[in-house]
Image (cartoon, rainbow, N blue to C red):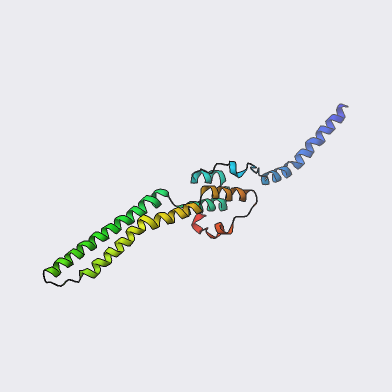
Length: 179
């Protein structure tokens, strides 16, 4: 009886040793899929957190980088660019105003001046820059931030992880610098 148990243990050991390499080969390819519904996942993550949690391969990292590149940084997009544009526009308007004033004074004094067309051009360009800073840049930034939300990024990454292909719009916007 003891002899039979020893033979069974010996064969079991040999069987396990023979299949050990085979089991390890297949276990490397296994991945645990998160089955949590997307609606319950937290999408309010920073770029680094997205890279840590969902940046499993180069494509996922590139998609995360592309989304954050397209979104832009709120401080720069909403404060620095519009403020700088408004300041530059106001400076051009002031320079154009001084040029117009100088042209008017030189005409009153009886001397001809050719500064008037250039001064008016500066005033027009300054007005365009100021308007662009106040209206156009923030509107463009808001549209970009609405199109490239963190929630849409999370949906794309989780769906890709679960076997769905990335949408064509995302793939077309990838640049070599995103990889």
